[in-house]
Image (cartoon, rainbow, N blue to C red; front, side, top):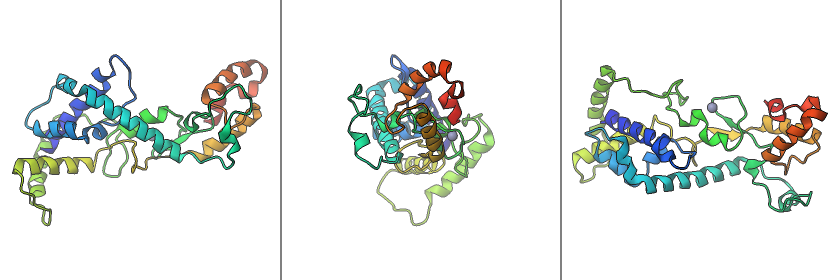
Length: 259
Ligand SMILES: [Zn+2]
């Protein structure tokens, strides 16, 4: 049951990473995040006895796009909250140069870097949203596996699954609801799967933190370049970088310097 469910989540993953990106490429959440949504989960659970084909997810396209959109907003908000707020309101007000009226999104600031729990490399936004560790399966220690789990059809695991399924069904003390046994085991299988699978970046998950170290190095470099680290965006620093190339060899590539 658990394995069959996991296999169907893999079909979902392939659909999200493949056809759903057409015509517009997406930054998509982890498949287990997507699969947690009602209509999708219901479909996965009620078709657990067979392999769901990739094209079958086409019927959920509008819902899937909505889930991706909801996740993006949720993830953005989550990340914004990780960024330390500037102490004075002045920096929030407007650009001091006067040629930019909009307040820069904290996520797009050049000094904003994130840190993944399992990597050392500073990660910028929006790269962090698609960061590989957050989209991978985890082992028992919570660390992502080296390669995505690719069910290679080993019989031993199937047998393990069948065994554990039985014990799951007779979990002592579990609330018994008047439902068909099949439904209960699909639910139990799902809960049990979620314990080991990554739902990626979302509220409640703590795999991403603000990268203080990279932030402070970046601030220094930005200041050396004569910009305000509180307001300058990644885009502006990239453009500036091109100009700096000729005049200031020490700051050839400010991003590389941070890393
Ligand atoms: Zn990582």
